[in-house]
Length: 412
Image 1 (spheres, rainbow, N blue to C red):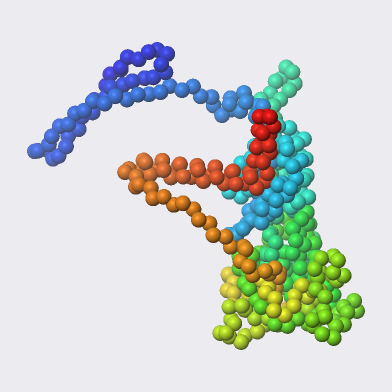
Image 2 (cartoon, rainbow, N blue to C red; image 1 turned 90 degrees about the horizontal axis):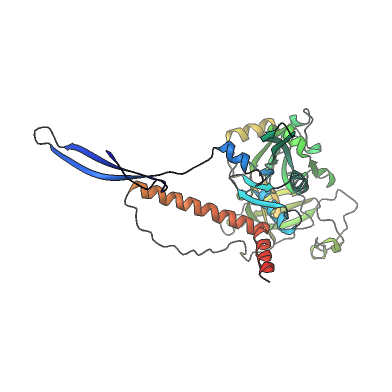
């Protein structure tokens, strides 16, 4: 090998290497020799500590929002956060940049006060617990100043709307129970700063006893007592055959005909949204094949009428994992009876608007010739996918709209 002369300021180092190899076996071996140049590029780079120290004005506070669910499915807590940020421009006006991660988002702020305001707003939208850490980047002993970066981790409660949850009866002993619904199977009815549960098999006493609120502090204190059995992806369609309101309260009016009964259609309808009722139904897929019907008690009495389509969980034909079967046998109270069907919500229409056909232009790409080019191609596709996901999340939250409006104002 030998050096090839280059300009001193070119930041290049060149070598001429001579490679020699013997090809074949010893009696008939052939010696092959070849010269090839090697070019080295010199680049100056700082270490991570120095880079962090001399770029201290990029961001001062970081808010990490995470929702970690054991069961694979849609993380509706993050979708709820995206919708809330898209509607509120004041909450996102101090965000310097945003990054998407596997289980959530990272938001960067220039000041700690803005990060604290953002965290308090998120706490009103979704139930969570927060943890704040500090890291000193640099320190000036003479002037008694320091560059400190703050990180706030917001862990959302891993419960989403329409989830079927088992509330262990031992949760009340540990001070983290869900009120009267401890030791029963529940449905997550609403997510806000609190988690609202509704009884999956309510008793016919009163509608008030079928609901209970759970504070996020109680959930994190007894996280092991709340087990998600099914997510909304396991919902199937049922057809309502008959609805009979439970005569457990004098507030339920009497109707001679079923057609005269008033259904809930907003606050102006004059009836409560939820009411206990005995519903006779059957699977939508069993029409014309089987005459099997089910009878269950639900809280959707003022929303259902014969002929409606509802979504629910079929516990008769479902197979539970071993841990869930153990929870079913040991986590419920003695008075709880496992229902055959758990109704969750009414289908608003059958126009098929939830399903969208996405037609993407698929172009055939030539096969790579070597493993190195294949790795480069996979790396490029992964980077492009990450950029597309980041742009999609930013557009849903309204960050791209603000940048477009600001650019338009600058042009004017």
